[in-house]
Image (cartoon, rainbow, N blue to C red):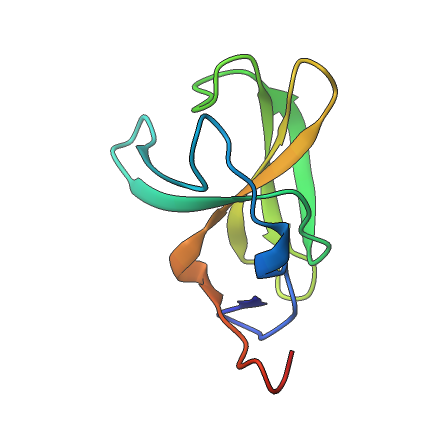
Length: 104
């Protein structure tokens, strides 16, 4: 799966994970912006920026940081750190494009 803005490889369908029982979630932030996100175990094309915080976390017991494309800097979602130290990414699905299988 690639960044919709610059086409850098961000993550792969095989890295999808279920968090709180499902891969896809729809959340609104405190400003009312609605995001459909997918959870992924890894996103090597993302960089986590800023200090981790629990403020307004959509997943109880987690800290989050913004996640941006390492090539173009577009905000792609969030990196979450669980209380056991595990991590996952919640990526905004309409900011990613699926690569055709013959190019993957």
